Image 1 (cartoon, rainbow, N blue to C red):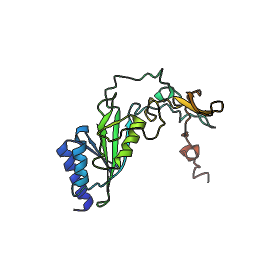
Image 2 (image 1 turned 180 degrees about the vertical axis):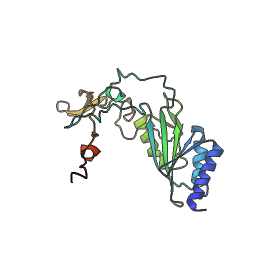
Image 3 (image 1 turned 90 degrees about the vertical axis):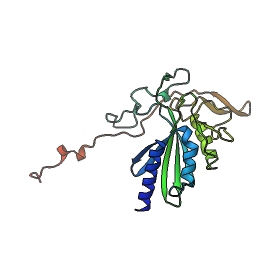
Image 4 (image 1 turned 135 degrees about the vertical axis):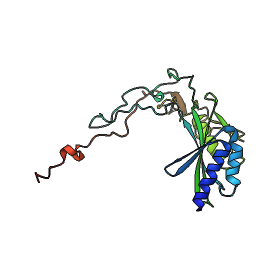
Length: 239
Protein backbone atom coordinates (compact mmCIF):
# COMPACT_ATOMS: atom_id res chain seq x y z
CA UNK A 1 0.00 0.00 0.00
CA UNK A 2 1.39 3.41 -1.01
CA UNK A 3 1.88 6.31 1.39
CA UNK A 4 -1.09 8.12 -0.18
CA UNK A 5 -3.36 5.10 0.26
CA UNK A 6 -2.25 4.77 3.86
CA UNK A 7 -3.03 8.43 4.52
CA UNK A 8 -6.48 8.21 2.93
CA UNK A 9 -7.30 5.05 4.84
CA UNK A 10 -6.24 6.62 8.15
CA UNK A 11 -8.25 9.75 7.39
CA UNK A 12 -11.41 7.77 6.63
CA UNK A 13 -10.90 5.75 9.80
CA UNK A 14 -10.59 8.97 11.82
CA UNK A 15 -13.76 10.41 10.28
CA UNK A 16 -15.71 7.23 11.04
CA UNK A 17 -14.42 7.01 14.62
CA UNK A 18 -15.13 10.66 15.44
CA UNK A 19 -18.37 10.73 13.40
CA UNK A 20 -17.11 13.54 11.18
CA UNK A 21 -17.98 14.30 7.58
CA UNK A 22 -15.22 13.61 5.06
CA UNK A 23 -15.44 14.81 1.45
CA UNK A 24 -13.12 14.22 -1.49
CA UNK A 25 -13.40 16.75 -4.30
CA UNK A 26 -10.78 17.35 -7.00
CA UNK A 27 -8.35 15.12 -5.09
CA UNK A 28 -8.66 17.37 -2.02
CA UNK A 29 -9.98 16.14 1.33
CA UNK A 30 -12.22 18.30 3.53
CA UNK A 31 -12.93 17.14 7.08
CA UNK A 32 -15.89 18.81 8.83
CA UNK A 33 -15.76 18.59 12.61
CA UNK A 34 -17.64 20.05 15.58
CA UNK A 35 -16.37 22.90 17.72
CA UNK A 36 -15.96 20.74 20.81
CA UNK A 37 -13.80 18.29 18.81
CA UNK A 38 -11.34 20.92 17.61
CA UNK A 39 -8.57 20.64 20.20
CA UNK A 40 -8.49 16.84 20.36
CA UNK A 41 -8.69 16.25 16.60
CA UNK A 42 -6.22 19.00 15.67
CA UNK A 43 -3.76 17.67 18.25
CA UNK A 44 -4.13 14.19 16.79
CA UNK A 45 -3.66 15.50 13.24
CA UNK A 46 -0.47 17.24 14.31
CA UNK A 47 1.12 14.45 16.37
CA UNK A 48 -0.08 11.08 15.08
CA UNK A 49 2.29 9.28 12.71
CA UNK A 50 0.73 9.05 9.28
CA UNK A 51 -0.76 12.55 9.64
CA UNK A 52 1.91 14.82 11.18
CA UNK A 53 0.36 18.06 9.96
CA UNK A 54 3.07 20.21 11.43
CA UNK A 55 2.10 23.39 9.56
CA UNK A 56 -1.07 25.44 9.75
CA UNK A 57 -1.07 27.32 6.45
CA UNK A 58 -4.15 29.51 6.99
CA UNK A 59 -7.39 30.03 8.90
CA UNK A 60 -10.19 31.55 6.81
CA UNK A 61 -13.71 32.65 7.65
CA UNK A 62 -16.76 31.90 5.48
CA UNK A 63 -20.17 33.62 5.52
CA UNK A 64 -22.95 31.48 3.99
CA UNK A 65 -25.63 34.17 4.31
CA UNK A 66 -26.08 34.52 0.51
CA UNK A 67 -24.73 31.14 -0.50
CA UNK A 68 -26.07 30.19 -3.95
CA UNK A 69 -27.59 33.60 -4.70
CA UNK A 70 -26.61 35.86 -7.58
CA UNK A 71 -27.72 39.15 -9.09
CA UNK A 72 -25.50 39.29 -12.15
CA UNK A 73 -26.72 39.67 -15.70
CA UNK A 74 -24.45 37.63 -17.95
CA UNK A 75 -26.12 35.80 -20.85
CA UNK A 76 -28.11 38.80 -22.14
CA UNK A 77 -25.65 41.55 -21.18
CA UNK A 78 -24.87 44.45 -23.43
CA UNK A 79 -22.21 44.04 -26.08
CA UNK A 80 -20.14 47.00 -24.88
CA UNK A 81 -18.92 48.12 -21.50
CA UNK A 82 -20.03 46.67 -18.19
CA UNK A 83 -23.56 45.92 -17.01
CA UNK A 84 -25.10 46.45 -13.62
CA UNK A 85 -26.52 43.64 -11.56
CA UNK A 86 -30.10 43.07 -12.67
CA UNK A 87 -31.66 42.84 -9.20
CA UNK A 88 -30.89 44.46 -5.87
CA UNK A 89 -31.26 41.17 -4.04
CA UNK A 90 -27.95 40.86 -2.23
CA UNK A 91 -27.18 42.44 1.11
CA UNK A 92 -24.07 44.28 -0.02
CA UNK A 93 -26.18 46.89 -1.82
CA UNK A 94 -27.93 48.03 1.35
CA UNK A 95 -26.82 50.08 4.34
CA UNK A 96 -26.87 49.13 7.98
CA UNK A 97 -30.19 50.96 8.45
CA UNK A 98 -32.30 49.20 5.81
CA UNK A 99 -30.64 45.80 5.51
CA UNK A 100 -33.40 43.13 5.63
CA UNK A 101 -31.44 40.31 7.29
CA UNK A 102 -33.34 37.14 8.11
CA UNK A 103 -32.81 36.74 11.85
CA UNK A 104 -34.44 33.30 11.76
CA UNK A 105 -31.78 31.72 9.58
CA UNK A 106 -31.69 28.07 10.68
CA UNK A 107 -28.53 26.78 9.01
CA UNK A 108 -25.14 27.79 10.45
CA UNK A 109 -24.11 31.02 8.80
CA UNK A 110 -20.40 31.14 9.65
CA UNK A 111 -17.59 28.63 9.40
CA UNK A 112 -13.89 28.63 10.14
CA UNK A 113 -11.74 26.76 7.62
CA UNK A 114 -8.24 25.50 8.46
CA UNK A 115 -5.65 24.55 5.84
CA UNK A 116 -3.06 22.05 7.09
CA UNK A 117 0.13 20.75 5.50
CA UNK A 118 2.30 17.78 6.37
CA UNK A 119 5.82 18.38 5.11
CA UNK A 120 6.97 14.88 6.02
CA UNK A 121 4.12 13.10 4.24
CA UNK A 122 3.61 15.71 1.51
CA UNK A 123 -0.13 15.87 2.24
CA UNK A 124 -2.65 18.69 2.62
CA UNK A 125 -5.96 18.72 4.45
CA UNK A 126 -8.81 21.20 4.80
CA UNK A 127 -10.74 21.16 8.11
CA UNK A 128 -14.03 23.04 8.46
CA UNK A 129 -15.88 23.98 11.65
CA UNK A 130 -19.37 25.51 11.50
CA UNK A 131 -20.29 28.05 14.20
CA UNK A 132 -23.54 27.03 15.84
CA UNK A 133 -24.56 30.53 16.99
CA UNK A 134 -25.20 32.98 14.13
CA UNK A 135 -25.39 35.95 16.50
CA UNK A 136 -22.11 35.15 18.29
CA UNK A 137 -20.08 32.82 16.04
CA UNK A 138 -17.43 31.10 18.12
CA UNK A 139 -14.94 28.24 17.79
CA UNK A 140 -12.04 27.11 19.95
CA UNK A 141 -8.66 28.70 19.33
CA UNK A 142 -5.83 26.45 18.10
CA UNK A 143 -3.02 28.80 19.17
CA UNK A 144 -1.92 26.22 21.74
CA UNK A 145 -1.40 23.72 18.90
CA UNK A 146 0.06 25.99 16.20
CA UNK A 147 1.40 29.33 17.45
CA UNK A 148 1.07 30.84 13.96
CA UNK A 149 -2.73 30.66 14.38
CA UNK A 150 -2.52 33.86 16.44
CA UNK A 151 -2.64 36.28 13.51
CA UNK A 152 -4.78 34.02 11.33
CA UNK A 153 -7.51 33.90 13.96
CA UNK A 154 -7.29 37.63 14.60
CA UNK A 155 -7.77 38.24 10.86
CA UNK A 156 -10.87 36.00 10.75
CA UNK A 157 -12.22 37.79 13.84
CA UNK A 158 -11.59 41.20 12.29
CA UNK A 159 -13.10 40.47 8.88
CA UNK A 160 -15.91 38.04 9.81
CA UNK A 161 -16.54 38.56 13.53
CA UNK A 162 -15.75 34.92 14.40
CA UNK A 163 -14.59 34.73 18.01
CA UNK A 164 -11.85 32.19 18.84
CA UNK A 165 -12.33 31.07 22.41
CA UNK A 166 -9.03 30.84 24.29
CA UNK A 167 -7.11 33.18 21.98
CA UNK A 168 -4.48 35.11 23.99
CA UNK A 169 -5.07 38.46 22.25
CA UNK A 170 -8.43 38.64 20.44
CA UNK A 171 -8.11 42.08 18.81
CA UNK A 172 -8.69 43.43 15.32
CA UNK A 173 -5.74 43.07 12.99
CA UNK A 174 -6.41 44.81 9.64
CA UNK A 175 -9.07 47.48 10.17
CA UNK A 176 -8.59 50.85 11.82
CA UNK A 177 -9.22 51.76 15.46
CA UNK A 178 -12.92 52.26 16.12
CA UNK A 179 -13.97 50.41 12.96
CA UNK A 180 -17.62 49.36 13.03
CA UNK A 181 -18.69 46.00 11.63
CA UNK A 182 -16.83 43.21 9.85
CA UNK A 183 -16.09 44.04 6.20
CA UNK A 184 -16.16 40.54 4.67
CA UNK A 185 -19.59 39.66 6.02
CA UNK A 186 -22.21 39.42 3.28
CA UNK A 187 -24.42 42.00 4.98
CA UNK A 188 -21.65 44.63 5.09
CA UNK A 189 -22.29 47.42 2.54
CA UNK A 190 -20.03 47.27 -0.51
CA UNK A 191 -19.37 51.01 -0.19
CA UNK A 192 -18.54 50.69 3.48
CA UNK A 193 -19.90 52.67 6.39
CA UNK A 194 -17.62 55.72 6.51
CA UNK A 195 -15.20 57.50 4.23
CA UNK A 196 -11.90 59.10 5.13
CA UNK A 197 -10.42 62.37 3.91
CA UNK A 198 -7.88 64.94 5.00
CA UNK A 199 -9.37 68.16 6.36
CA UNK A 200 -6.94 71.09 5.83
CA UNK A 201 -8.65 73.35 8.37
CA UNK A 202 -8.18 70.74 11.11
CA UNK A 203 -4.87 69.49 9.71
CA UNK A 204 -5.84 65.89 10.29
CA UNK A 205 -7.72 62.97 8.77
CA UNK A 206 -11.44 62.91 9.53
CA UNK A 207 -14.16 60.28 9.18
CA UNK A 208 -17.52 61.07 7.57
CA UNK A 209 -20.62 59.06 6.60
CA UNK A 210 -20.13 57.51 3.18
CA UNK A 211 -21.48 59.74 0.41
CA UNK A 212 -21.27 57.53 -2.68
CA UNK A 213 -24.16 55.38 -3.89
CA UNK A 214 -23.78 51.58 -3.71
CA UNK A 215 -23.50 50.01 -7.14
CA UNK A 216 -22.34 46.71 -8.53
CA UNK A 217 -20.66 46.13 -11.89
CA UNK A 218 -20.49 42.78 -13.63
CA UNK A 219 -16.80 41.83 -13.72
CA UNK A 220 -17.26 39.32 -16.54
CA UNK A 221 -19.88 38.98 -19.26
CA UNK A 222 -20.61 35.57 -20.76
CA UNK A 223 -21.82 35.68 -24.35
CA UNK A 224 -22.52 33.05 -26.95
CA UNK A 225 -19.97 33.07 -29.76
CA UNK A 226 -21.70 32.26 -33.05
CA UNK A 227 -18.38 31.62 -34.76
CA UNK A 228 -18.28 28.21 -33.12
CA UNK A 229 -21.93 27.22 -33.46
CA UNK A 230 -22.91 24.42 -35.82
CA UNK A 231 -25.18 26.70 -37.85
CA UNK A 232 -22.23 28.88 -38.85
CA UNK A 233 -19.94 26.08 -39.93
CA UNK A 234 -19.51 25.77 -43.73
CA UNK A 235 -20.97 22.70 -45.34
CA UNK A 236 -18.63 20.20 -46.91
CA UNK A 237 -20.55 20.50 -50.21
CA UNK A 238 -19.90 24.26 -50.36
CA UNK A 239 -16.14 23.89 -50.06
